[in-house]
Length: 289
Image 1 (spheres, rainbow, N blue to C red):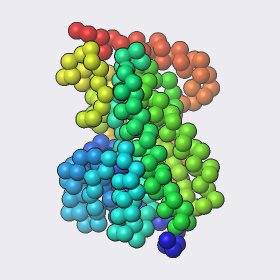
Image 2: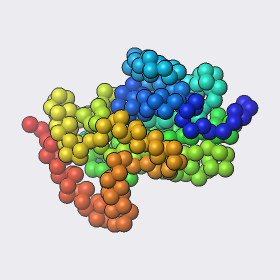
Image 3: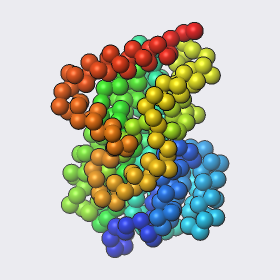
């Protein structure tokens, strides 16, 4: 592939977003379009992806909707190829797709772990394997991986989810160092609590077997409301501002940086606070009726 120039800001750039049928992915896709990007909207469920792409198109921004199961590397590579074929380049890929998972480690089965790791971690790995070679050949590009604050601080009762998010942070930091000389940028998003369907487990999430689903979702919503969730559209604006500045780790809402600072300053104290506050309150909310 011949070089197509240099990484564009957002105007006129080509961006691919996974998990863009709802939540953070949808908000990022819509904000990219507002900023002048041509957006490929992908999701496991093609219908919501098509709806998002249609709405973006009605506002005058070129867009394309494609079904994508991020667990399928060959499909991911085909979607990247379709993006380049349609728009002539690939400036940004947002590896955003993920599922929620809760419960103590003793409650999780091996199958639960595989499901979370396959989607949350290998989905990002596949995005890197599909997009990074293309971007290296171009000589430019920006890979943005969605992790979580749960990838930076202790997160009891979400061990499988937190494991994948810590791994995404590690992958992103390592790849950023490796990719710099090739002209490819890498950033990792670490959202705090954002008002998305993930706050109640999400459509494809791993839920506990000890509670009725409706009750569990209700209690999860109540628990996360304590953390003053940020609206997805505001998160997307703040996140893309960070991407534009090429920040390596982008934390929003910004006050969550205090938790990250505390964990780096005193890991023991950070774990103690998680044990006394998060674990105790989460257990109370998730106990059987």
